[in-house]
Length: 328
Image 1 (cartoon, rainbow, N blue to C red):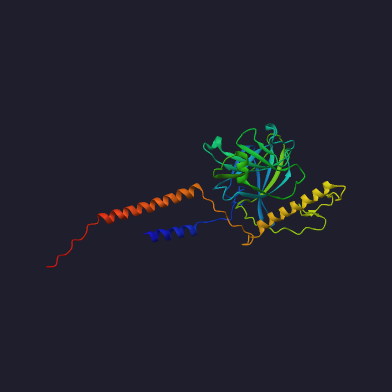
Image 2: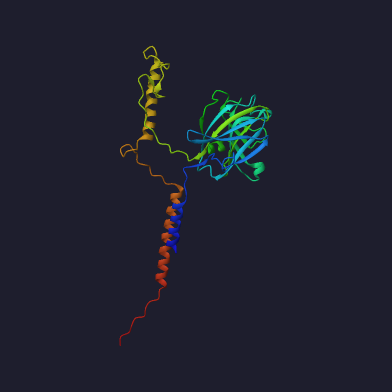
């Protein structure tokens, strides 16, 4: 029975799927302009949605004119396992005069939301919105004026990159921890949205597939050779940086040079310790440390041995002696 359960456990663990990424793409649904697996939500007006194909990949084309609508796709997974979100988007036109920092002009041409449901979901769910803003500068972190549980991170801003396909990447797990200061619940859905109802204007945007990926494993890299005239601390040419001349009339320069050399040695040693394994010659023998846990372990072991000896002795004393046979 135990062998059977152990074999079953091995089969289940081997057959459990492990995905490299979770993808929310925009596959064409037959006789529908709504992508397969997505749901349309219209708040004001009627949205214009077109599924297109270019260079072998499908994407969705959204147009908004004085309206507000979104597409939602339900998902269910742990963001710690797939923390990195990647997507490509393009914006052709921005809502005129829009600004996420003002509830009266809170419109954006392109928005991606990651939704984390928390009971009760209608009022307590957490939302992270990655947006292309008209006015607020890129890099801004903003709390929604309408819902304090909705946080915006401005990825792109303004007209400078209009008409370009841009590839974006964020660590959603790290963003959630930074924005809400708590561990995230399971993801419930991902959304793409466009709205122009507050500014009474128009906008146009495009989205390709949204992917949630595992965090890449980082490997240490060997230090790159430094070019002649390069700044040793940065590893790149920096002609504007000049060391003070060393002479007997400038003792501060000598101290500067000595400190700089010492810093270089320290940086090289730090890089070497990360790149090269420590050899027996370099390694220092660890000093013996007796902790409180070790002392408790030794006392417990000694007590166990003493109890074992006492029990064995008691059994030996109580064991009845066999009567001697009398030979007649």
